[in-house]
Amino acid sequence: MIVASGLFALLDDVAAIAKVAAASVDDVGTMAAASLDDTAAAAVKASAKAAGVVVDDAAVTPRYVVGFAADREIPIVAKIARGSLKNKLVFLLPGALALSYFLPIAITPLLMAGGAFLCFEGAEKLWEKLTPHDEDASDDGAASPAERENNMVSGAIRTDLILSAEIMAIALGTVENEPIGEQAAALVAVALGITAMVYGAVGLIVKADDFGVYLARRGKGLIAAIGRGLVTGMPPFLSLLAWVGLAAMLWVGGHIVIDGLHKFGISLPHDWLHAAMHVAEPAGGAAVWAAEAGGSALFGIVLGALIVAVLHAIPRKAH
Image (cartoon, rainbow, N blue to C red; front, side, top):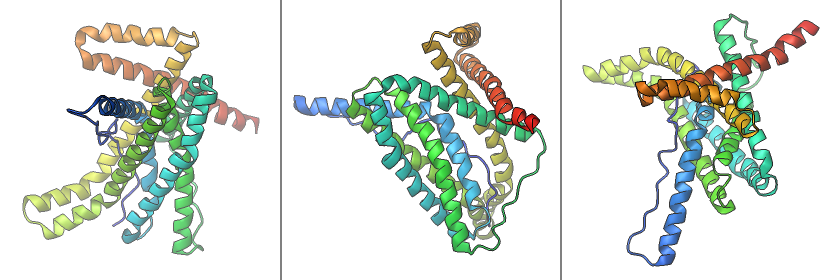
């Protein structure tokens, strides 16, 4: 069975990154352990900040296996995962480190550009969800299955390059004040951890309904009911997660731009956001978080809508 495309909301950090602890060792060993511990902490922090992009990265991939035989789904995901890792480690990591070493002043504007892109992407997707539109169907009926697969994989890897660049830029901005060696180690950890999580999750998505069918046919009682629940529950579950992923893009993108503006002396959005968080303080930490996330997302919607208008509405009127 083929799974319909949809979004999957990932955890907002790389939980698999373990911290190294050393006990009863000499001073050199203790220093090494502390350095590794700092690198792991930096990697987790960087991964958490890149959460919104990770959600989007995971959201894009499942649609690339739609229309292929079930036995080709996991191999296709594996090919895309290898391409994603190559994007991050071979192309983006050296570029990020060179930027950090030779032109660190460009990191904040680069982050703001990535945040603005997230806002644009989120606003455009929101517009598409709220308004009916015709989707262009691609005509690849003449291509062989192998050619179609290669074309899909190539397209997925190109899309991943953009999303991975956003992830690495956000991660770099989180560890930009660390020594260059720790920056490199943290970015490698982020690249490995996020790639494993994204494409591991995608693999589970594309096989969830097959597993549900297996349980429904082979199991009895509760096991069969769980299988039927997986088959019938995945479409609405993925639809809900689509909205969660959309909100995450707008929230993270808006927050990045607000922080960047504050660093350049434009503090009004930052002040409004913190005023809202202050008002929410009596209601507890969850309310403060909701005020921060909601305010950032609202800013992201406004900014994204302006970019959408400039890139789409104005050119259409000109023609």
